[in-house]
Each structure stands twice: as structure tokens, then as C-alpha cells.
Picture 1 (spheres, one colour):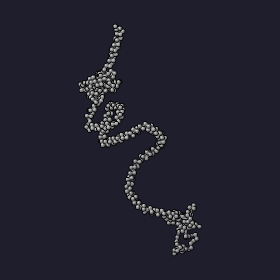
Picture 2 (cartoon, one colour):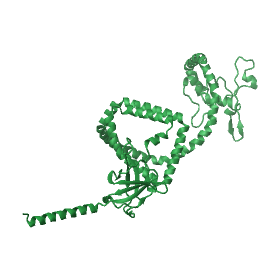
Picture 3 (cartoon, helix red, strand yellow):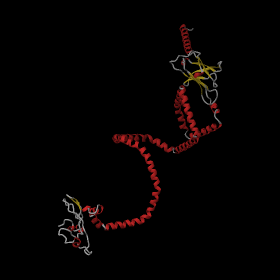
Picture 4 (cartoon, helix red, strand yellow):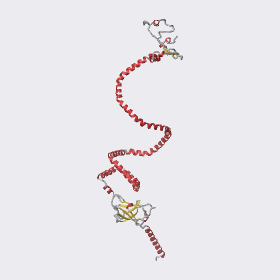
Amino acid sequence: MIRPSRIVAVVCLGLAAATLVILLTGSTKPHVLHIQFTDAGQLVTGDRVTVATRPIGKITKLSLTPDGLADATVQIDDGAWPLHLGTTADIRLASQVGLANRYIEVTPGDVRAPALGDGASVSTSYTRDVVDVDETLDDFKPKVRKDLQRLLRGSEEAIDGVVPQAQASIEYAAPALAQSDLTLGELTANPPALRQLLRAGGQVSDALARNAAALSDGIEQTSRLLQSIARERRPLAGVLTRAPVVLPAATRTLQRVRGSLDRSVRPTLRRLIPVAQPLAQVLDRLPPTAQRAVPLIEQIRALLPAATRGLRLMPPLAKIAVPAELQAAKSIEVSQDQFAGLRQYGPDTLIGTALIYGAGTGYYDANGHFMRAQIVSADDVPGADLNNMFGGPIPPAGLSTGHHSRCPGGATQPAPDKSNPRIEDPSLCNPKDDVGAG
């Protein structure tokens, strides 16, 4: 016989289980949302709906709106509800293999925006259709397809032997792609900036098209450079391996160099500040000076042919002139004594030849200028007897003869300061022949 207490316990347990089921099923009631696309992109009923790769619902129905748009009716789990105004939806490809591998990725709107009601619609202004690779390839011309095939074959050759490294780079590419998606989102959010970017890109493309040959040469040179780098892969790997050790030492060296520059170069630069303005003035004057120098340079350039011909005549002339100059040097060296004597009589020669005859030996007194004349005559000349010439005997203090060895400056009365006559070499003259010698 079953005890009443056991019956009560079983009933209570059943009630608790029913309450739990009601609570669980009641709290996960799905919500309906209509998402419209211009092209359903081979979506099928049952495809999942995700937010940041996390499933939040599924497609329950596909239909057409009266204006010919594709309407995807989706169920959104209660945990992802409510969605807000500004929510967007994109058709994504799970992979490039197969057809029924599409899904809808939802990007929730700002939580501060108004919430969408159950059964609301997301218009095509907030949705994007899928773009198949086949459609993109169909837009390519045959030449572009061949170039793409060569590119793919070249990529296969490029990663041959470095597949692990390529896989690692693919893993690191995910953040870059995510950032690229954000960047593209920013561009589409600013249509004027996007149009300006596209316009600039078109100008760049036109410039590249006009210089296709130069661009081809540049690409070829870049290819050769990359091939050279690839051949030096091991040395480069060694350099990169040693870089963590070298860079700190280089940093310390640069810090010391900076200290040296602070101590030596900066003070020098400060001292150069006063010179900067005059130097700037000099540099400002250089262009007009250069312009004025152009005609001079042209004239010098015009003289160069004649000067060249003259210089070509110099070697034959040198064969004659050099021996003559050497002989002249020897003659001058032998004649130094004569030149020394002539040098001392230079003032007398100048006064006697450059001035009016007799003026150099004239005098002044109270009556004016008077002249002293000297008569030189050989003893054997007929009529040279001065007594006969003057008609009487010579006064004792009058005329005198035989003064042939006067010293420099001795042809005139001695100056009060004894500056004449000058007797530098007694062998050249006889002081007794000087004027005023007693």
C-alpha cells in the first residue's frame, strides 16, 4: 500500500517540473522580424541568423513583397531582443563551396535608438545583398581573367615551401580585415568623402594609364628587386635575427651622438646666428650677380679658342725663350756691380734728362732763378783754351776742369742736412770732384 506522504511528494515534484518548463519555454518566446533584400541571394528556409558569428535565430519564411523585393521572415531569440532602429543585415557566405551556405548577419543598432517592435521590417536601406565570386569573374574580360590566372599561379609558386608562414599570416590577417571593414563602413557613412576618394582614384588611374610603359618598367624592376631579396632570404633572416641585439646598442650609440651634438653642434649653431642674416643677404645678391656674370662668361668663352691657339704656340716659343732668359739671367748676375753703381746715380740721371737743361742745377736768390753752366772740352781741341775763349786768364775761383768722377748728388751744392753727396761705394767716385769740395 502506497503511503499518502509519497503521493504528495510525487505531486509536488510534478508541479515543480511543470512550473520550470513553463518558465523556461515562456521566457524564450521568439520574436518575428521581416528583413527585405533586393536579391535573396539563394537564401533558404532554415538558414541561420547571427550577430558577430553568434546564432540568434533562423529564417522561417521567404516571400516577395508587392514591389518585388525579397522578404525574409526570421525568428529572433528572446535573448537577443529587442533590436533597435538602425539595425542592418547582410547576406554572408559561409564558404565558396556549395550553394545553400548563406546566412544573415545582423548588426544591432544603437541601444539609445527606439526599439523595433515585434513584426517590424528592416528596409533595403539597411540591408546588403551578397556578391558571388562567379558574378565578379563574369564581369572580367578574357585578358583580365588570364592575368588573374597568372597571378594565382604566381601566388602558388610564391607560397611554395612557406605554407606554415602563409597560414600564420592568414591568422594575423583577420584583425586587418576587420579594420578594413570598419574603414569601409566609415567611407560609406560619408558619401562626399567617398566620391572625392573615387575621383582621386580615377585621376591616379588615368595617370597610370598614360604612363603604362613606365609603370610596366617599374613593376618589372620591383619584381627583380623582390627576386633579389628572395635570393638573399637567409642573409636577411640572419640580419633580422641579430637585429634585437644590434638595435639596443645602436640606440645607445645614437643617444651618445645626440649628447655630443648637444655639446658641440648646438653652441656652434648659436654662434652662427649673427652670421645668418649677412649670409642671407649674400645669397640674395648671388642671383643678380650670376645674371650679370653670364655675358662675361660668354665673352671669356669666346676668347678661349684664341687663347687655345696661343697656348699651342707656347711650346715652340719656350724652346727659344727659355735659353734666352737663362742667358739674360746670367748676364744680369754678372752685371750686378754695374747695376748697383747705376742705381746710385738714378736721381742725377732723372734730373739731368727729364727736367729742362740746367734747371736741375739752378738756384734761386732774391733776384730770381739763375743757372750754372758747365763747359766740358777736350784739351787737344783747337781753341779749347779757356783763356782764349774768355779773352783773359781764368779767375782763381771761377771755372775749373777735370771733374769726371763726382759722387751721386755731388753735381750741386751740399744740402744743409748733409743728404748729398751720397757716398755708398767710395770706389765709384772721387769726392774731390764734387761741387763745393775744397
